[in-house]
Image 1 (cartoon, rainbow, N blue to C red):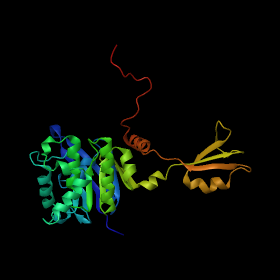
Image 2: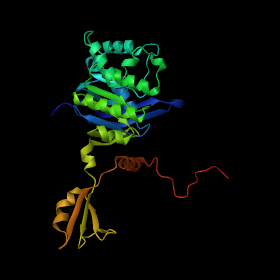
Image 3: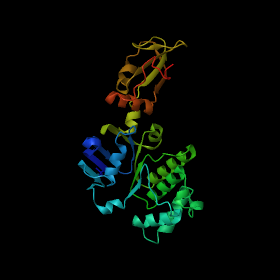
Length: 312
């Protein structure tokens, strides 16, 4: 079995907050990111996504548990050259122009001088930065800075691309372009690991996922297995099986789990006709909300009749 590209094993992390209180940012984080996968790290704001990523990148220290990159403990400087990283709130030197800054960062990533021009041209094209190479970053909008942030993360063709909320500040056109670029990075063999609270992005890009909430990974696995856990919907006519629901057009419908499929079909009443057999598509956003609410109850719907206006 191939070594996972990235792994957390029982990782916890706390820090000193106001009035010397301990803030427990992570309590139990365990996950495995397979090689060449696209891994969505899901969680609400404040769930522990960015803290986990900062520990991975060596920006925070003092955790308990084990974090490994490419099968090795953190701290091996050779592994850093195989990483590409875009933080949630990147900081750039505003007085540098795009071109000179990208060349500088490519050198820091260990690229040879001979390879840098072609590498920069590649990301200029992918992210429409060619005409902006002489512009200083201080003149960039949030979305433009995000484009440069992705460019510097992929310029050296990293083996593992770590992106913290990569779609933040992007309009719909650039969200679509970022997804295309991330798909191209994966197609060349890179592993993608990105955090998000926007579930549609994960559905579009990922084959693996983990859910973190209040510093604890609630579950993880293959996205196909999760989506495949949705119920089977059987629509038929004639005699109804037990538990079937009448439909306005005179047909009936019954829902059941995949594990019940064979038995249900074998024991339909005599004369029943199958009109349609479909798998209901699970709504990842609805599943996520239900899963997190079941864990701690935050974000629950307002009670019926709750007042939304000010005092009259």
